[in-house]
Length: 261
Image (cartoon, rainbow, N blue to C red; front, side):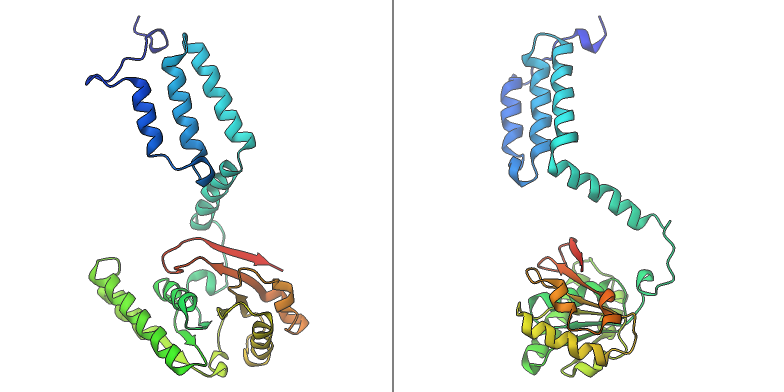
């Protein structure tokens, strides 16, 4: 019979047993706890195709494995969320009059350390202009600007960024040690160290400095309460404050957590 369901699964032409091939495949799969649940389930379903005596038994195993991933796997839910979120964000169906949604606007990044540098690079590569990197420490600011310039130049040399876009990005990079330079920003990301008092002080000052009442005032905090930070703002501004947690290095990792208060 030519029906596949009536045929047995042959071994590899080179004599490798199916069992060995499955064991070999598992060696290259990530651990289940590290995002590998679906990969291990796939191997389990393949193994059933030659270990069990009938096609129907193998299909039953595959059905059970699939349903388990579909209904019980937290990793599966996360993958599905990412799948649809990526397509929704790039579909163009959502119309917005906000300049930030169109890749335009003035960006402020407070803190020229590891996170601040990466965040600034991300906005520069996305085409926002100008991007103002701010740090009260002149030496730290100088080091941050130098790192950004070198990173963009290396990306251009390696072909990850066209020479014209590199030049445009470098021209859009501004730096300052004065918080008042962020007055015209459409979006400000605070990326200083994890100290609630310091962050509240910064946001309190931004409240009176940033001119646009609907400007987004965001914190890169990974541990602190966003509501505790936003409480330092005037009531009308608090709805425009949120957490925007980038993962390090920010200009390479695509994942960003947005935490609404």
